[in-house]
Image (cartoon, rainbow, N blue to C red; front, side, top):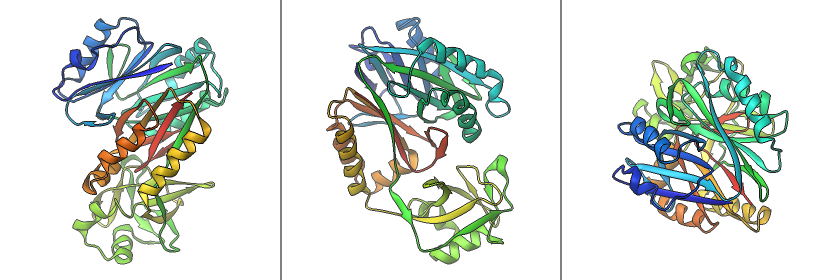
Length: 351
């Protein structure tokens, strides 16, 4: 299979798809103003081709901040795209669609991946989707788009998750998650006074969450939102840690980008040597896949901001490009199998 990436910084879809012929699956990453027009136009250019889309920045060797980016897979892919609606209230209502699509693709853990783009309520959505994917042990990568809208097959949907099941007919697929943080100190917290619907973290070990964070790191209210780049929270999940970014201060509580529940065990994290960790990820992918056809990744918006502030973003994209055809989305949260994480990178590699 092959991966195509086209882009236009000015938002010209015609420029972005120039040279694309006979795609078998398409991912659209557009801007808030032109999103719906781009979705309709893309369907006219490639009628009947499975496609998903969202509002967000895209990248290959450069970042497209306000225009449009198109990723397409071709020459050896079997794919189907669809959507689960009402994800904020009842995503399971439409789960039969995913079950039918699984039968159509007839994929396995070795050759098939689910790529999803979501509007929100990610943890619940991933739990729902994983009930079907786990029947064949199929992996998932994806992320949250902006603007509360996604697209599938030429239609725009609010409050939904768009997904594509992509089968590589010429080799394997494998998903990866990169974490550039490690534990800070020996702090261990039990969360309480949480508001699951609004992602509010009220207390840590019985004390106001804001006060705990400020006293440990010696920061002010104003500094918390930038300090989360260096010191987010982490939720222990078996032998893995899910990163939880701080969104804003809410009185004496902290609003996060990921749901926290009462009795969750949290730790404090600190930024590691992200350049060395990136090199390790690249080396691991090379060991696993001596031959690579494509890599599609989702990088968190906070990683993008962190790397940009430290003048590393461009070099990061160049290093990833050495793997071959690499492109992706800047997301507002990252999906890895049944986990919703922040400040991470997830990707799928095609042999």
